[in-house]
Length: 388
Image 1 (tube, rainbow, N blue to C red):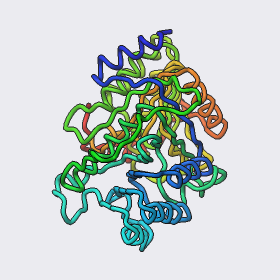
Image 2 (image 1 turned 180 degrees about the vertical axis):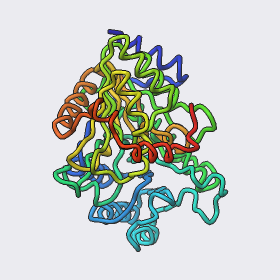
Image 3 (image 1 turned 60 degrees about the vertical axis):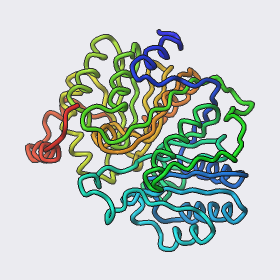
Image 4 (image 1 turned 135 degrees about the vertical axis):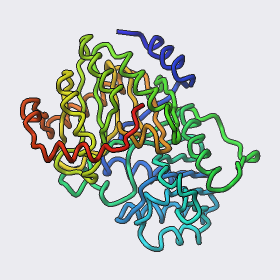
């Protein structure tokens, strides 16, 4: 197996983005762990809170976040919020207004009435919370009742989110600022805001982190480069968890080649509980090629599966907002963290194994006998799909 520095050198040389050192990362599983940790960070903030999300809908979590952010603004903390106009279209009535009245600066990313029609399909899918420039959060969680609870039944989604301290927080801040500049129209620097370096706390803090942020792309994006690089460097194992799965031909070829050189490949995605049936159909057209290539495919069956992570050789982990699909690779603004650390990778591998207990393997022989109607729907949903 490669050393930490060997993985680091390949990823830095390919993506041109350096790793930061001395980071600490907490893995937060499902709403019962995610929301209290985020709200605690908000409540403890003393100077500044920056919050960016794609989904902000309804439910107790939506109320709690709006109230907490409003309270901090009333206390004199600088609070900035970015909501995607599409993803937060079903936000509970009055929450945005309540925050604004309390002094929160709320911005809507690419409102349909104001944005160029040819770019209206390009959204910010990032989920970022930064408190005082020291504590950051990212992952897949949306602010809605679907994410509340502990994935005990179909009403509670399965999710993974992350609490980050250390130099990587600056990368999360840059992702927020990139979207803020577009909504505000200028870059608001804070020369009077003096903050200590975003160093980690006293916990294990030796994680190497590379922050990858991407925007809509015509052909290549850093997410495409990242995913292909991760597959190419794998020597022993690849574990992929994603809410939406639709790989292109190049990715399928790389995954099959990985199997040929002895790499064990597992991919987990939502099964019967799925909020995007068309997206699921589009991805299913690739299953036959993947199964023929020796890739293990799994449908998570307990509830909607929204967790996003890639684990390579139980050493390198890729976490963040991006799915393993066409939108994340080409259309949306995303934020991913590449982490080199055995302990983190092992924890995520254990979570993957736990999720396997609620998953069903997709049988190659049964899949090859699926109906012609199913095959037809798969092809229709992939019309116009770009190959990258």
